[in-house]
Amino acid sequence: MDKRTFIKSIFLSAAGVFALGSSSAVKAARKKRKWNGEFVLPELPYAYNALEPFIDAKTMELHHGKHHAAYTKNFNTAVKEAGLTGKTALEILSEVSKYPPAIRNNGGGFLNHKLFWKMMAPATGQQPSKELMGAINRDFGSFDTFKEKFSTSAKSVFGSGWTWLVEDGGKLKITSTSNQDSPVMDIATEKGVPLLCIDVWEHAYYLKYQNRRAEFIDAFWNVVNWDFVSQRYIKSITPKTT
Image 1 (cartoon, rainbow, N blue to C red):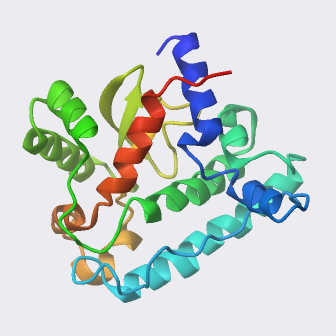
Image 2 (cartoon, rainbow, N blue to C red):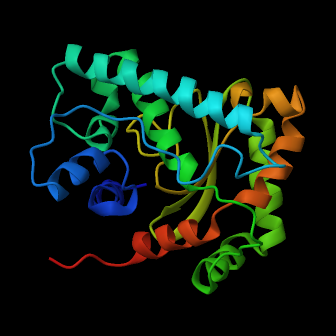
């Protein structure tokens, strides 16, 4: 990605495409009070058991209430120690190479999970919007080919990490990151605006699927929130007016 395109993607993200790192600030503004700079564990947009039988309630409870909560707490601590209080998570992670590993690891864990919860919804047979489906067919040949490539990428992640569908300069790409890295970080090999992601850390699936990551990935397609993903795609390709 060239510098101009990268700056564009960061601008779009800050304007609401990623719409995660600044959510605490947005909520504070709505209540007409100053944001204190502390990141807050978000509530899930559904009950812990809402994704069953594909993702079980106990996994969701531990994943959200323990793992994500720990990333949130540790990120706040790291931000204070680094003197970054007041910056949004996206602002921090977009230049994460400047900061200690605790910022990268915990900030990524905080922001990635905040997006991941919204990427899922109770199974309703959703499909991508006409606009997103057209882009998928254009860049991958077909929806089935896209799913196969995305699943293969997720199954191939060595150890812990994530697989992403991103928009970059009008084109859709699939990329994977290790640990809690993401395509919004300046250290990412493939940068772009995240549209869809899947967490393939063992804590995301081990209680139900044990070591059968492939089964978890196959089940994931039943709970993808295509309405949310499609909205993000439209926002990512819509020119911003000044």
